[in-house]
Amino acid sequence: MILYPAIDLKDGQCVRLLRGDMAAATVFGEDPAAQAAAFCAAGCDWLHLVDLNGAFAGVPVNGKAVEAILARVDIPCQLGGGIRDMATVSFWLDRGLARVILGTAAVENPALVRKAAGTFPGRIAVGIDARGGRVATRGWAETTDVIATDLARRFEDAGVAALIYTDIDRDGAMGGPNIAATVALARAVSIPVIASGGVAAMADLLALRDTGVIAGAISGRALYDGTIDLETALRALRG
Image (cartoon, rainbow, N blue to C red; front, side):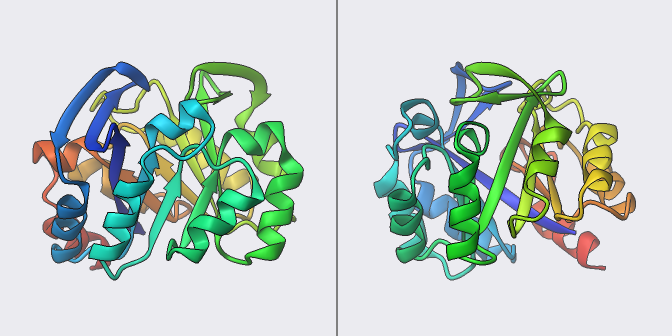
């Protein structure tokens, strides 16, 4: 199982939100590129980047910070937040991102997901952010009537590289991931599923790994707070 350290970008800074609330942001660093380099030096295989401002605005906002990260590290990075048209997908993939994540677009413009996945095989992921099992969009500000599993199944044959499932109520709360819901999603589709939200301790990572059906896990606050040591976690997951 791959561990993806998260760098959430708000106003050019590294932050973590509590349950997606932009007003409840904790700043963990003023230099996202330096944070990316530190994660890279610890030995991680991927980075997970989120343009939080972009998710609300519907267009990239923290582009300079993302480009600085890409210039600083040589491991693959995936980015979500404000990517809602082919031009933006192409823009970021051309600048060195390994993968872009389409979240709101997956609900509002599923044809874009299919077109992007066909044009850029293996480089498009779908972000499924759920509150109470229902998908939320536009920076988690709007909750839809779409069931998370139903959305995932819509892209079963689209060729997307991964599904990133976030339980919003767990995100940033350090209360443990929603393993049952993540496993249910992973078993409902053949697309690799990456768990996000609530990972607070090594036990959480090992529990996700031991399900045998989850391809990856994203962790942010636990790495910044030090409740998970990145090098130790990487060794355990690789071992």
